[in-house]
Image (cartoon, rainbow, N blue to C red):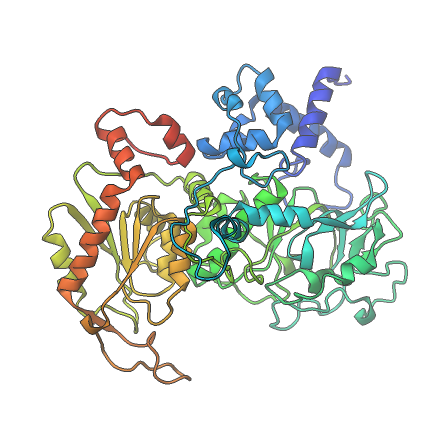
Length: 577
């Protein structure tokens, strides 16, 4: 018996595939590779079955914070139309909301998401308030995404649907490709300990005598070599993809159709070059830029593969691997898993990188006088939603204080017990001391930080937890160890209030510090803090929390019956009542 699908259903499926071509799993097998000789006809059947199932029950696949739905619908008109037409669409209320992130071509600046405030002067960075706001928008907020979208240009052009495509932003900091071919059969490609080899795809260094394939990375498309060569200025391992793409080749064959693949990857693939997985501050350079890449790619699907671009076979320790669940349903793939194989990828994304010049998060120029990036607020909401964090506050008569105890060789609080005892004398304070290490699962760590109205710690990567604090929170970098801007700028980006020690005469440094090569150094010693001055800062921080509009609103909603549903939706916060 021949199965048939109605014309309207086929039409609907085509629209759905066109809209979500980077989101859906276009093939059925669960493995991330399809070996040559797989049941291609069965794959086509699986595609149509999968699309049909998602047409009837796929709304939950959006998996976005409720407050983000209207932005997504506005940026995807076909999906919005589908929601209008289908009675079971759960997002009817959001259809009439005219909202946008700000980077969309149609977005009216009056309707874009905006959490920024610039109450103080820019200290000479800009000439007026308007340019100060604009600089913050373009360097720390969704204006950064807008500028990258405007830079996007085609490097290798397709002529037919079966052809390949490569398009990149300036300096190849982000690229997107279709039907790409990567040949990893060259001997020794993954030998040694160099994580980011620059000559992997240089055809002049190939040992193969196969003259038919003139490149080891490329596609069947018209290559604009001049445009590609013009983007090499930022060539560096964690700043651009130029080292990987500079030898991209225009191939004389269709890699997939002509049978040149040992492996075909049908799900979208996100290539990433990762920063240090043992340090939260540096690893979140990866996650923040992956979220920015989701926006650039207009896809928030987790039905994707993330491939760690590492040209060695060395181990990679990841202390924060729980975070990947916000971005993919599958284990992270190491590039060397494709050693000795010719790999074809239907949909490839080369993600924004963790240490770009004037990039997002790291090397980010944060104009003085401003705070509150809508992008970083959305990042907080997105991860909280995807990782299932629950906000238990605000509490009715308590302010929740978390003190991060380092338990390391340096940057310890020598009189920590006394300071904790002093805070506990204030009945309003609910005080918790935590040590974030391998003994405490990362999900538990961020759940704790997510429910910290005030978070206290000495300078160190643990302060990156401020990214998870609620909007009304205060981060206290008890002592910045002469690194004045790192967490101050991150707090300004996140939009929460930052405080640090103010009176140098009331802190005692244990000794001059013992950096292994630089000698005396403020980060390599321990500190004792004046109890009275410490409590002055804590009470000041509590005043800020109590007076914050979102804290007041949250309390009213939880305990006094005031309905603020729209505000909670906008914040995208899961609140347990």
